[in-house]
Amino acid sequence: MPAYRNVMEILLEELFDKMKDQLGCCTCEECRSDIIALALNQLPPHYVRTPKGEMLSKLDQLSSQNSTDALAALTQAVEKVKASPRH
Image 1 (cartoon, rainbow, N blue to C red):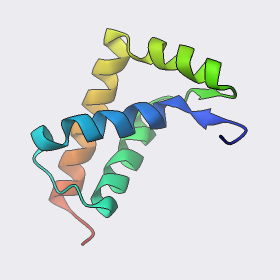
Image 2: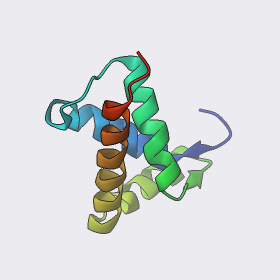
Image 3: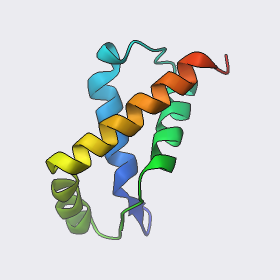
């Protein structure tokens, strides 16, 4: 594990992988990365340094508001990438 990790990155990666069949978009690695990067730019970062901190922070990120914000950012990013894919 690096010295620090943005828990929002983990949350969005997991959310994309869980929802990819419902998102109606290309799921190749390039589109996946573009979508997650765009979504991350819409959300505040939340950095942790330890696995325990990561676990506690992930639990906090799963609150209904954080999940709603992450899903909204992911959905907006999907629409942008669908409209203008780079491949």
